[in-house]
Image (tube, rainbow, N blue to C red; front, side, top):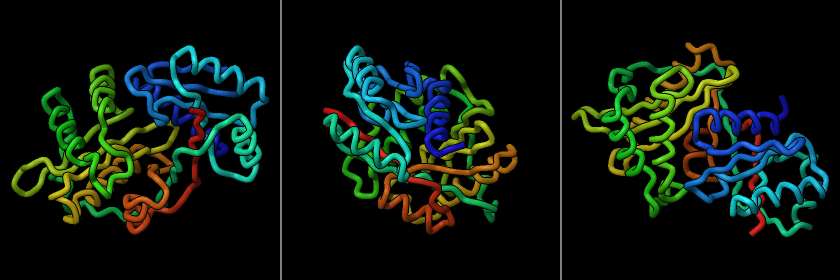
Length: 260
C-alpha cells in the first residue's frame, strides 16, 4: 500500500464512522466533505496518482456545488512534487503539514490501566466531550489545532450511530481523585490501530496521563491483531515532539493544498 492509498483508506474509514457526511469518487480522486465544518481537515480530496488538469477541474466543480473551497490531501514524496507544482499553477497553496507516526514493538506499561474507563453511555460521552474540549483550548500554545467547535458534534454523531464497538472506542482517564483528566480514542481498520483525540486538560499535564492512555491504546491495538499502530499530528508541533520522545517514528508526511 502506498502512502497515498493509506490516506485514501483513512479517509474512507472516517466516512464509515460518520465523521465525513459525503464521499464522492471521481476517477482516481476520492473526495470527502462534512456539512457542519468547512475546514480543510473535513473537506478534502485524496489521490492515488497525479490527476490530469481536467480531473482537477472536475474536482473543483464538485467542491463548488457544496460551497466549499477545493482542497487536496496527499503524501509528501518526490513524485508528488510535480503535483504540488501543478496545483500552484492552478492557484493552490499549502495550508497544513501533517506527520504520520508509528511505533513498532511497543514496550507497554500497564500500571495505571485501572484509571481508564471506556465510554459506554451518553453520560460517559458528555464527560469525554467536556474533557477533550478543555484539552484543545483555542489559546493553548501546545495545541496546533485551535478550538474544536463543531468537531464535538461529529464525535457525538459518530457515537450515536456506532456506539461502543470494536471499530472505534473512546476512553476517559480519571486521576487519583476520580476527576476526568485525559481522553483519547482508538480506531481499528485494515490491521491498523489509529490513535486519535488524545488530550489532557492543562492543569493535569506532565503527570503521565497521556503516556498511560497511549500505552493502553497500544495494548488494545496489539490485542486486536493490528500490524500498524499509528497517529497523526502537525509537523514540528509540541505533540509531535512528545510522541517521538515516547518512541514513535515517522512513517511519512502529508500536505493540504487549498484554493481560496
